[in-house]
Length: 121
Image (tube, rainbow, N blue to C red; front, side, top):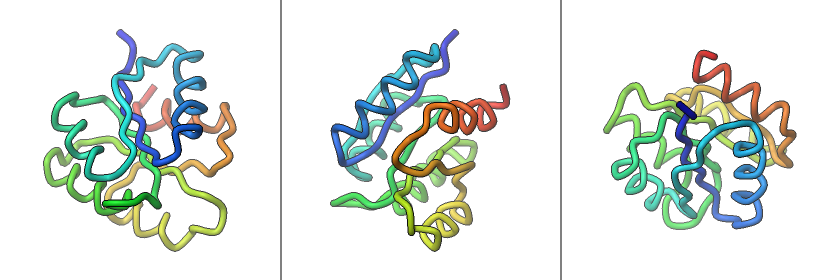
């Protein structure tokens, strides 16, 4: 069975890029969200195997959403996506329970490596 992934990013273009990488590599994208609040709702509804989460978003940022998701499900697997120069936020995210992080612009092999590692494949 394909691993079910929720993509969270406020930029439609970034969601499309990551969706492309995932589907080409046999993953099932079960949903997308454009901010942290939506991400928390979609996580509740879809219960994905993994979430890719942008750090900086309107409404609720990725770290706040990560914390809410981890409160709901301590075993939730979340990989943070950050732009260059967000190291401090990446550290906050890892401390809040993120399993890994990938840097934008996305490199397909790095995305797949992070997802496989997080899913224990």
